[in-house]
Length: 193
Ligand SMILES: Cc1ncc(COP(=O)(O)O)c(C=O)c1O
Image (cartoon, rainbow, N blue to C red; front, side, top):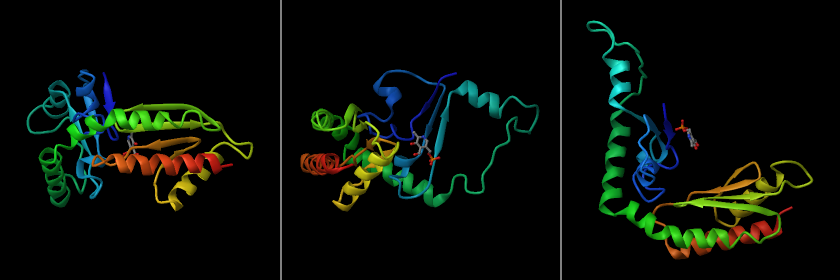
């Protein structure tokens, strides 16, 4: 059984609808959320192979469902409308293609941070990046949080996961946004504890 959690990587982030397609791997299950509605309305979705669907839905005798599974808000009309509208915009504005066009510039920009003080690794794929910092003497996660706070007050929202700065910029990203994000982060890293 191969399960891809595509909550972050799904819907264009790696320049294709799913990372599974970009890397030509077909998992048995894909989980998604976030960009399914552009994060505007809460919604998640799980895609499964026919075999798994049949085992859950069609294996029980008569009218019963083998794995009964329901939520109050399953298939909520507002969420469904938001998802459909979002998917239309992705297609009409060619945002997955745009993400792929921007990925090399993004990659070069994030790797320009590699030689800054306390940066011990820079990782990226598609429009995603992780900048790993050495923990400060004040404690694990303190440097990451300090960089997060400094960037926030300078107008750039990054995610601090311990001492790793995680970034996944909007798919409408342009060169000027990359410049803003990277220069702000550079300043924060240089000034951080
Ligand atoms: C990779 C990944 N999977 C799953 C989740 C959880 O998603 P949800 O909050 O929609 O349950 C997150 C949330 O950040 C995530 O980053």
